[in-house]
Every structure is written in structure tokens, then in C-alpha cells.
Image 1: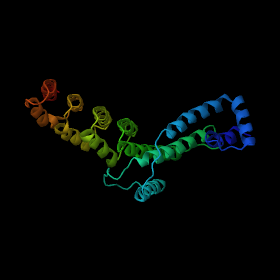
Image 2 (image 1 turned 90 degrees about the vertical axis):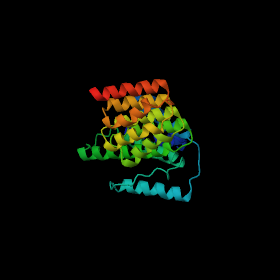
Image 3 (image 1 turned 180 degrees about the horizontal axis):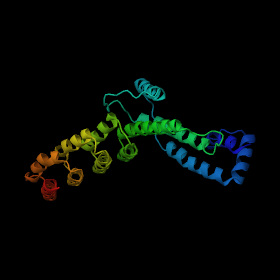
Length: 263
């Protein structure tokens, strides 16, 4: 068997679905080919990570939403979407993780296939699909109950080069309302990456009154100063003059006003 044919057996090998004859052939090839062992171990880590996600039973409505999303992706639907975040549910994490795994598996299987040369359009299409999958996974994880899952969702969102309004709204909602300080800080870091977007800048300024954690308040001040967003001056003045606000935050707000004035 060729290496490409052996690669096609990796999913069945990891899931224990090979026949005894196929298993014997595969393990012999695994013993002889170091590059195959590397690919199997890489995919095993991903496979086992997906297995750690809890099994949940999606509702009929959720299944419909999920398949609508996949159908739109397969059609290359790039039409604008109204920003919505509330319909996502934790059950999507497992499904989207599996979709991402299959996509990555396709890349591994296709790696080394010298019979075809990828065109610029092919590469661009693959990149678009990767970005869409990252957004899908990010949105599903951001709505989970576990703070660690939401942190992972922010991380996925941070890997999207050009997020749509839905993802940006989800990250802003996380910054304003997530009960976990670390998740809010992570979402702020992700949003700062997209600070050239006017809606993001307005959202960050509007987030100042929602914050009650001194850590998040100071990080938000620093982000707005780094962006040189003078629109934040009004909110910073409110912070600096509010006796109920943490003293370190008031001091940082005064520093921010000075920086925005002279830069």
C-alpha cells in the first residue's frame, strides 16, 4: 500500500474500526514509517481531546440551526448576518470540534499528495473555511457554563483574522457580562487585536461603565490609550472623579487622560 492509502486508514485506526488484516498491515507500516507515526500521534492528541468533551443531546431546534450553518458554509454564503449570540448552546462545541477535526484530518491526509498542485484559489478557499470553522467553534464555546471552555472560545476567536459582526458582538458581550475576570481579560485582549474596527472601539469605550473589576478596568484603560481613542476621555473622567472606584483605577484613568491629551 502507498503512504497515501495508509493515511486514509488513520481515522479507523484511532477509532478501533480496522479489521484484523487491515490492523496488521497498518501497524507494520506504522513501525516502518516515522512520518506516519508523527501524523498518527498528532491526530491522536486531537482525537483524545474531542473525547473529553461531554456528551450532550441537542434539541431539534439546535440541530436545525447547526445544519443551516453548515449548509451556508458549503454554499460559500457570505451574505451579511444579523449579530446574534443567544441561540448558540454548549451542544455545538462537540459538533463543531468534530467538524474542525475532520477538516484538519483532511489536511493531514492530503499532505504529501504530489499528484495535484493547489492553486491560489484553492488555498484561499481553504483559508476561508478554516476561518469559518474557527468562528463557529468560538461562538459555541463562548456560551458554555465552564469558564475554561469560554476561555478556549476566546482563544479560538483570537485566531480569526477577519471576524464577522456576530463574533465581535459575542466577544463584547463576554467582556461586559462574563462572571469570570480571566475570561473578561482574555476577551479584551482578543478585541484589542481588532481595534481598527470602529464598532469595536465604540464597544470598548461603552464597556467601561460595565466593569467592576479593577484588573479589567485598568486593562481596558490601557487598551484604549494604546489605541489612542480620544472618544474614551469622557468615561475616563468619570472614573477618575468617582470616589467609589478603586484608587489605583482612578489614578490609571488620570494617567490615561494625560496620555490621550498629549499623544
